[in-house]
Image 1 (cartoon, rainbow, N blue to C red):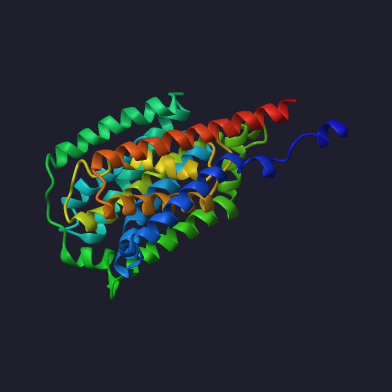
Image 2: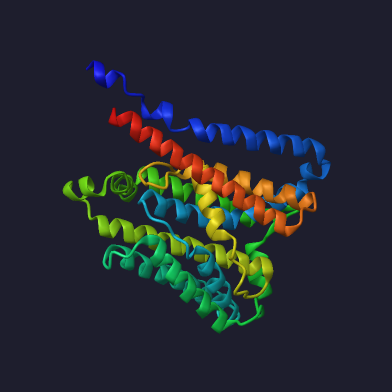
Length: 323
């Protein structure tokens, strides 16, 4: 009994490194909000929401995969593929085009899932391969930006009340609710945490681990395709290069929100915080006229720091529980 009492609780350890990063980012944002009056305008806050919606969709899918101790590098390519597929289909039938786009994203996710679970290919290598293939298909469909996007589709996806983006806000809330329900209230979510925490124990407990892990990749593909449909309305065309930054940003948002790269820990609540922080930082950099190269450098630095802290937290947790 005494030995077990000396072990620190998970609740006390899990947020220590991340809290420092949260405080630093929030302090930085507050200072810049004070220094930049244009940040607080209704129009600019609306722009932040518009920026956050696709990142939230992709980051939720990425969170699902990370919870299963995997990773999905193909989300950016799926977004690009989705915009190109939409650019050749929604002008013929909006509903049919939407279904086709979502199906294509889920198909990529299914291929990822089967490669990881059936062929036992490393998730990094598997999704890197599908990234290259999917990106090539997107370039084949639309070698350069173009296509016809119906005005009614754009008006619906980006519907506003004054300067307030109504449909994007509704979509933002719906994604959050779906994430909370799927991860916290569903049987699939409970099984996912079990598989990510210890796949061997989960399998011995009767959980179909291959089904669960494949489901996370299909979900990731679906939400990446949803982000692509949204981006199609924003850019009003199909663009084979539009999703380039989302694979790293989605990982950064999920890990910044407390999702462990080793699986089994994290959730939707933290991912939402990570998405909002990254969206606000990107908006502030634009208001300050930061060169795009510096923005990419800073995004890379944030990702490295976040992943390093996540690994440090996991290592400390393992060391303390192994004593």
